[in-house]
Image (tube, rainbow, N blue to C red; front, side, top):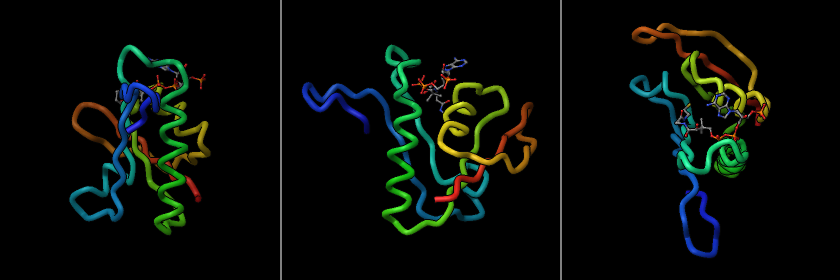
Length: 103
Ligand SMILES: CC(C)(COP(=O)(O)OP(=O)(O)OC[C@H]1O[C@@H](n2cnc3c(N)ncnc32)[C@H](O)[C@@H]1OP(=O)(O)O)[C@@H](O)C(=O)NCCC(=O)NCCS
């Protein structure tokens, strides 16, 4: 969770999958969200940077991150954190873009 540290107000949350099982391989290692009222202030980009630090601490050498092909904000966050586009997989009625970040 990303909080302001003082009041404890939550700005955003993230999850980190330590291992990609067959069931979760398409979701990637990391997911994140920012409170709607706090979006477009850089918190999403910061949350992913903090998650990548956690991945390094855990010992991963690369992280897979996926975003829907219509999620411009998430794509920008991934690219700002060094994501390299791998490919797009079909998922339902849209595509899921896969990016790899070398840690
Ligand atoms: C995706 C999400 C985390 C972005 O959070 P955020 O705090 O607004 O992100 P940032 O402020 O760091 O913005 C990152 C970039 O996206 C852009 N952006 C933000 N919202 C956008 C939108 N709705 N449409 C287009 N671009 C957008 C910002 O301008 C910024 O661009 P820049 O780096 O070129 O300046 C947030 O919208 C969210 O929680 N969405 C729902 C959950 C989700 O989609 N999670 C990602 C799953 S992979």
